[in-house]
Length: 514
Length: 100
Picture 1 (spheres, chains in turn blue, cyan):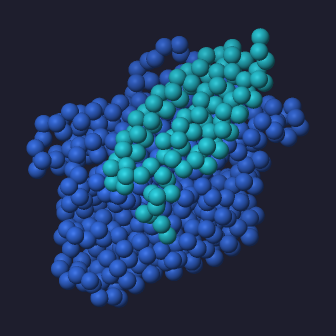
Picture 2 (cartoon, each protein chain N blue to C red):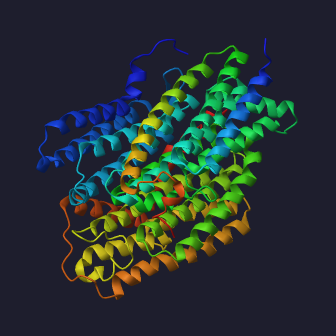
Picture 3 (tube, each protein chain N blue to C red):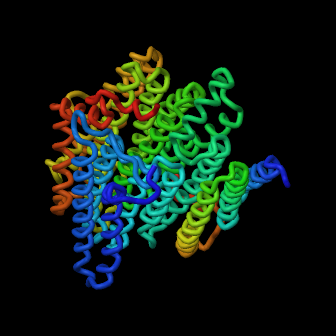
């Protein structure tokens, strides 16, 4: 291990550094901009995302080449592991952020809260996400988590004169800080058990302790696992730790709700997979029953609660919790077999593909809801979307595509997300769970079709055409095309996921766990 | 030399007090202080383990937890002020606009 930092370390942190610089730049430029030129901040933020993407592309070209190349590189004394898994998530975060920036501009102008801090905080939260996905040391992961969370608390409360936005920020902050405290306590116990903050060292030490105790876990390890897992499940909003999500999603500015439901959630998943699958893999027999319970509770609770919602943002919040339940099933399959089995990789693939597909279809649906905000109409009730087909036909058809994809109807993208999850469940012989998941998908169809029904069949409350900004059109176009395209040509995207897991390599990702 | 277990029991008590305070108290500021108490329990356990393992990484973590707690407090108090301005109350039971 190098005792000093080299150029490699700095290249690997290039996207993080670029995003930080752009965020600080926006804060400076914002001071000089008159009120009608605030859109320049959005352009700067978008440029920052593009530069960071170029940085990730550069890392990928140098350190994670195709067959025969490396799977990834450690940086900063093994506290950061920029592997293909991390690079995959970097692209997801950047795509989600770019789309969220596009849909924010007009929305913030209507709300009369168009400040540069909005975009700066968004970029800073992406910096935190990248630290979570690439962190290989619990210190870095914790810092990344908090950087992301604190930026998001402010973004949720960004409409500071709005009572609902304030309340959402308060609830999100209190429960978020509470869960971080529990998470940190779990980490401190793991540090005490193993004497290291590095995930690999923690994993090796736990493996050794399990062997010494004939495959039984230390009671302290079980306590540490439960507290850590509670913190992680809070962050991905799984039932019974989900209460903050509907409130925060409903009160937040709509474009931020979209951002939270894709990028922030993907980051929480990256962290969860890093910790539970890479670090705590020796304890998988201990957390498997916990994950099974939580996934069933999540699918049941969220799908039942979504049936009766009349607020679109709240409905989609429950639907996003339900999607977390499906993704947790992939984790169940992954943790119930050894990493030499196909179910391990199919479960992993399922989660990663699901997150990619979900980024596009869910952000698309939130983009449509964002566009409903117009002069006096808040536009988040199911009545506000009534007759959308007569006011904006193209948009209504795009929304229908997103809803069908969220419900998992082939040949749209959402189907392939679920496909690998169910496949891995069957491969790992969880037949009951697989049939339960299919059953709940039917529930999903009901509440998505309720929105579609209101949108296509009912008379509009207002007659005038819905104005769409250019940013909004671009975002809707990209998300709709991606949702259809992934569904029709899934092979390329499955290849991308295989690449991120190193399945094209002689030593797949599991090689990193030894 | 005080044995490690004493520190761990104390950190467990601090953490539990924080969790109970978070669940029982109704004043937002008190809830916030309970979260700080939880984090201090975490800090104590990290420092105790760092001394036990003769390693510095645990103490480094404590520094970062303190920084994070300070940042969280700054943002948290700002949000509490915003909430107070729109409702003139600090009781969480009265902050109930977002419901089913």
